[in-house]
Length: 503
Image (cartoon, rainbow, N blue to C red; front, top):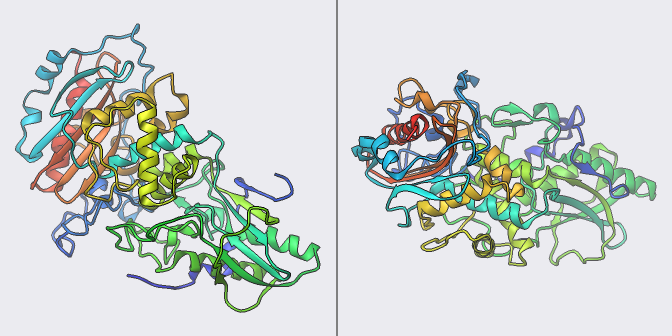
């Protein structure tokens, strides 16, 4: 599955030129195989959350994919009527929170379903954060991709709302330039009209930065200085520690480096929800940049070389492009459960918290910021930002506290956590859940939730509007040997009971 190909070096990929909406000029600011009998119309969450040691392949599209989103095989979508709002105001004066006893009665036998195996869960009032009902709610469990909620909350709390990730080009010695990775894995070699996020075209706010545009701006600056030939190096010194996640498989996650293009995909247009990745994303990105420079009339002498030292702080910047804002990146990360982007967002949090931009440093930054926000951290263990790691532990009560904080009027900076959650039966990793055969279809369109799946683990954490119009935050965490589809349907039925509860 590993390759060192330089697919993106072809400047033809840049025609027509992408919209530079988020770019700025420097001068202007596991079994070891799939289950061959798996139903091809299984829910999309399973497609995205496959464990590569089981019938599912790693939290891979729910522990993180980045290519599937709302798209299914054959590019089919399911239209779902929306019964009610996905997030109401949650004003305590407008509605009454259910009681613990009422929830116990409403949920009834749904929480005893054998398909759930061991279930830890918590339900809270999203308006106040008050715990309402649960079981083993303080007992840590494997969060899988619901780990991304912690990553998202910490990053949004640490970084200003207008924070964008820059990829820059700076001058080196005479006749030399350096491409500097700032940690944006969404930088693309594709034209804007060919970029897809979750199977859908991008709008101006979500469009990624363009490698072709960066090359154009660099070439313009070089020609203005009378230069038509350069030596090119590339700087990946921003990140520290291992390049590869402990559960790296070159599909569900790329090598974690601050310089890459199209998240290290071998084929940037691939609709595969766990696409094959190149072995060296930084080298691929540099080759892509060199190809675009050549198309602009700038000769790159020799092969791009990795810089042996970090770029000096005072190096003269020639050109830059920038990612969408951190809020848009968080929404993309949560909706499509993008592992590679999650690790990049976690490292942005680490840099902001003055921690090393590594797996360990990012985990310290996230837990430190959550503690500052008053989120309970008893039993929390984080080793990554994506949730691919089975060593991660989070109690359900912590997940509902994260969601309540994100929904709170006191923390408007955290709102992209809520707006980025997939909508039941409609978007992202929930597009094929809460269907007619699930027994949970009454909740379609009124549940927003982050999914998480590893082998034997199924989690769901989000918000639901109950029958009285009250917004509830919930976290359901299972460990089971049951078929993943069966287990997920059982989880969904619990949430559907919350949606119909006027209790």
